[in-house]
Image (cartoon, rainbow over all chains, first blue to last red; front, side):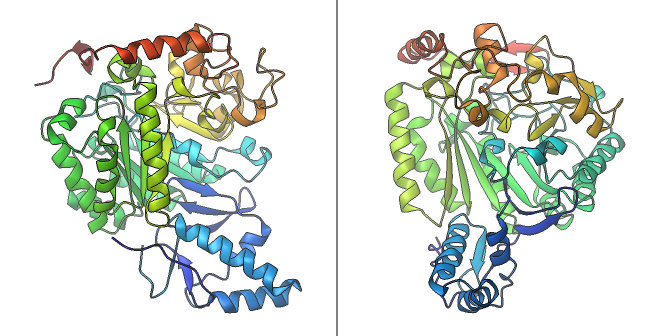
Length: 101
Length: 385
């Protein structure tokens, strides 16, 4: 049995296989499609999720967003880590080198 | 089909209702009512469709393409047992070509490894397998198919072997609720990421067998405790969705995310239903995909308009502050238990009939469970063995 994934600034998150971030043209909105789930992320979440490419660390994602939004790093850090941890707990995100779907 | 917790209720809706009027989020495709299992909790209607009335491959493909164009996100292949259709592969491929995220809801037979592999290659995204118990003998007794439990186990392993994500749907009731802990263990061992602990809901055929299924309040409390503790223990490892029987709820469930707001269901012969049990309401008329486009039906079908939104609501729903949260609960249940589909769902404690119905179910739960009433297309009988 595998363990819970704990997200740190070192983690490199990516969507699990079979989970997709997609732009639905008809509805003009971003959606996360997952097994038997569908989420409509808000603007902040979309900004975060677009960086989850399986290459960037949480640290670099926070840095990029801090520069982009001119907000406090700790606020952004809380948003990013919180969102990714939540998605990892749901099984929608994995981290590279920390176990697969 | 499996009397499962509607995945419909598991969708996060952080959006407002405006988009969903344009098109539903998901499509439940009931490919067939045929099924090798005879689960007495089957939520399919009392009158089943025969094979010769089912939509053809071409008719389904037309609908799937329309669904993609409408912006529907997901398609759930269900039944009956969807894998009895030999064209499942074509329909899965058509779904992924049309931009739909596809999910197979299976009882575990007659699908095999080769077909699962093919389906995964063709773009299937997820499989849900239902289970009746952890004990083979009891499981086969409940499902009404000898060897059924072994087949389910085998299919769950194949799903993981072809690297598809797996949800286990554990249909719980008084005849297996004592094994809930073991069911949770089984789901982990099979490599599921998600487990639905779905207490039987009493629609369609299931209502005939209510007395054989309804747990006591004490059994239900125990189950709730087990689920809550497992959720803590297995956080990040196994997601557990939990549905209690409506009869013991205080407020009704948000059935289908609101009537005609987020989902549609196409039955084996092509009628488009706001939910899979909607045909039980005799005052409704349904439109067929053979005569209209899916989009036309979504916007214009009388069956969808009947209970869409809040205008149809009588009291106590009309002045209730929850009316745009639970949308009045389940219309089919309101009809089945009160005789009027417009009545407040008696699962709601504000329904004048709530106490009476709760009392009736609790009385049934105290008595020895009667024998199951099984069915095959066209007849009733008591034991499959």
